[in-house]
Image (cartoon, rainbow, N blue to C red; front, side, top):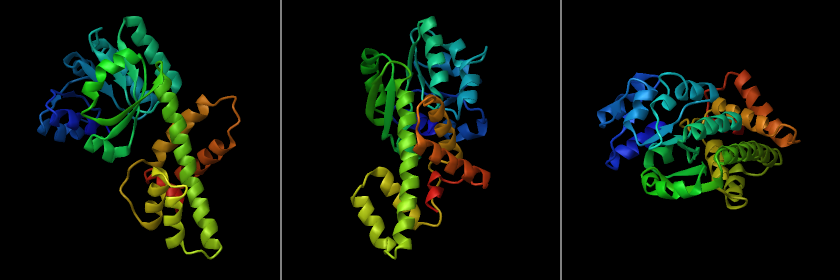
Length: 269
């Protein structure tokens, strides 16, 4: 996702500085004109707008904090954006650190998948100062089709966890629906398209595509959705959400079965 963002900025004429924990993964961006920084701090020092897209709370914390972290290279003239999917607790801690230093901060998780990141059609789910966001929008056009604003810092991350919880539940429910249909003798080639028509929606179409194919390109792994659902459970502490708990159990079983690197639609099968 981060590579897609960087490439679209390059293709739209922006100067781009990058840093990656695995330098070899940055070679394509370097070849396209990006400058490889020696640390997150150095990347931040070279940029007006800083995006961080890593895997989880631990990786994000290591990139932002410390003497070589993003915060060490930031100042009040820069815009700091966290775009991975993390816990709301860490997101709010980071927002507080930025506010204490007078830095402009947005939580801006992404949706649309790898393809949308690569073709610049992401939807950005934003928390932060709305007025400052409006001034930033011209620079976001290179990477997205939509900017959905949800409120103060942390709100974008809350919504992303809500969204991924619903999407994962939808995929597992589609799997059950298709099993019920086939067990009752219905033709899956008729049932699938009918479900794409009603209830329809993006996730139904993703699920039906996965149902028909023996293998599909990885768009979102079992490990990634399991991580996001864990953060959603933490957010929901004290709220009874039995469907979420069942979906978490389903993906945890997939991980135990050695399917963590498979696409999240493995639930269909």
